[in-house]
Amino acid sequence: MDGLLFAFVPTILFLVIVAPLWIILHYQRMHRERNALSEDERLELERLTQTVGRMGDRIETLEAILDAETPGWRKRDGAQ
Image (spheres, rainbow, N blue to C red):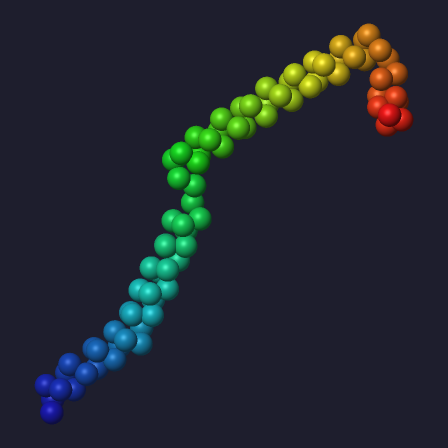
C-alpha cells in the first residue's frame, strides 16, 4: 500500500499543478508564435514603411510647388 501511495501523491501533484501550467504556457507560446511576423512579412513591412516615407516627402514637395505656383489651389480642390 505504501508503494501505491508513494506513486499516487506525485502523480496527483503533477496532474493538479504541473500539467495545467505546462499546457497553459505551451499554448501561450504557440499563440505568440502564430501572431508574430515572419521574416518575409517583417522585411515587407520595412519596405512599405520606407515607401510611405518617400511618398510623404514627394507629396510635401508637390504641395510646396503648388503653393508657390497656384496659391489658391487648396480652396478650389473642394469645389470640383
